[in-house]
Image (cartoon, rainbow, N blue to C red; front, side):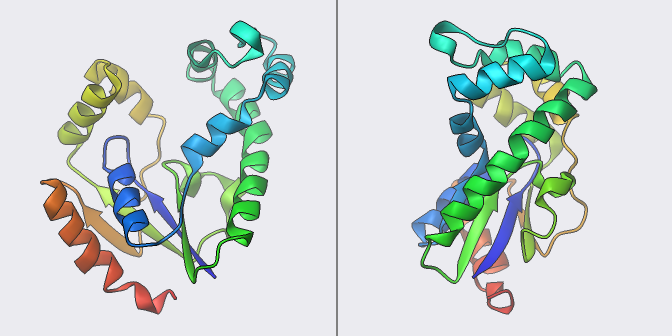
Length: 192
């Protein structure tokens, strides 16, 4: 079984490409959604001990805004959180991949390429790209926040400059589907 990393900057269209791949029967692991599942009340308490701040809400669930205000303003805190949560995510992905009956799976993540925890996990990289202004406006509209807020989050992402497959997402959904077909699916045989 081969693994491809699906990555790209905020608002690039990774989720849209992931959806297209799923529609074509390729299993896609959504690392953002999987990470959110890891924030059980027990883990939230462990994170509070690790960071020394309160990040829980009602019932012990994670207060995402509280956590974001800590880690996005303190690189050391972000590093501690990543050191704690990424190994758990990697274990969950490996369990997920083990039960898939497919020649190829995709790991969707905006940040995995720049995180040593994931080194050696994939056999190739799919980069979804779009012009920066388009990415910022898409993400702001999607998240209901200002473009400046999106730019601050985007500044924390390392966008890869080298990929095995490039999907440019600067048009309609139909154009994106066509590009996934021609720029990825028709060329993917050399990975599998």
